[in-house]
Image (tube, rainbow, N blue to C red; front, top):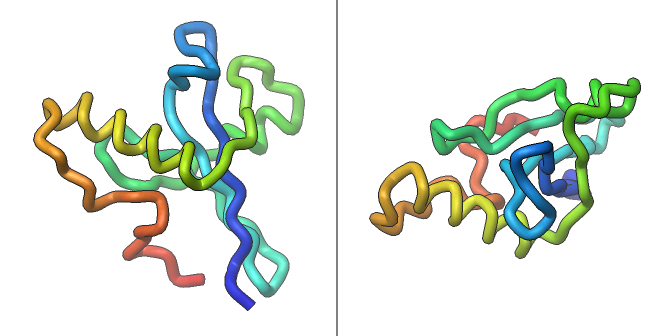
Length: 101
């Protein structure tokens, strides 16, 4: 059975649901673990404790559950912003060369 992935739009005081600050994903492993990652301005998925912090009461960021398609759109927007719109798409939501399951 493949890992289950839940995607979230990251919204803070400087962003909105329509234009979130970034995208976040939580991967649930078959073994019962979970891995939390934020799509960074370095155009890679990186570990992030932000969702755990929000679950513990930190209200600095809001996490809105979204679809994989919506997550891909946010990733593409971030890539276009960072790369100047050169069409780089090597870090799409489904790509994760460092994920070891």
